Length: 281
Image (cartoon, rainbow, N blue to C red; front, side, top):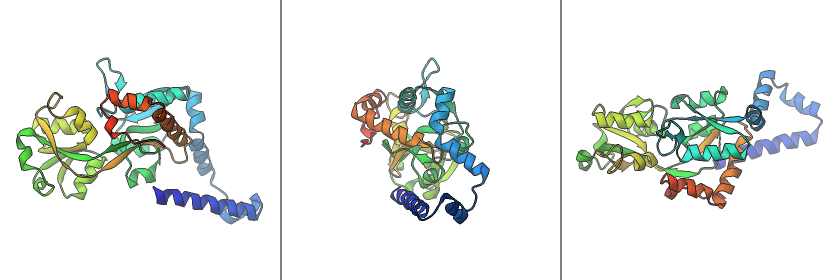
């Protein structure tokens, strides 16, 4: 992130220096005419705030991912991310509209304008940060291995996992960890489906987010016969917007104020993720 920020600063400094040395015409001559379609794309991205306020809604791309985004008994989307997205939208004078997406297509859904942001416990990988403008990180997380409880003693190291068949969410950090560790896997639609595969016995194990595991795996949960063993990494969550979007800074400001006034912690406590919160400065 530091390198990316420094690159942006250096590019901006270069452009300012060129503008100071000559007229707008001279700068245009140096760099050539900007293609019309590129100019339109840039304007659209920069003015995301105006666009959502004109249509009256912030379209949020999500998947079924408890405790971040999931439906209650009435069919309403709830969860830490869903509640924060609703609060952010309200601060902008609009409503949040939640749209389920194919996680592997999240960058395409965003760039095409089908959604305004990706807000779903999204790991800030290099791939994600290259494809989107991302908020400051707001939660710590890890990718962990899920197995049947009665087999947990056999799978306490990465090496012990080599013969297992894993279920992982397509396009996810879990899928990346399976690849990085040379594990055999099948890609499924979302993390909830990965858990279902293990519970049904059609996969030996799954790799999912630690925050999801804490909410859905173990005694007193929907998957009381499953447990988690090996932690594969550590990571951070962020929210993704289109490149150049003015909503990114708006959300960072909202995160800072909601952390300072305690409302962010209160929502986190509702869903049991308060220990994972990252201080917003």
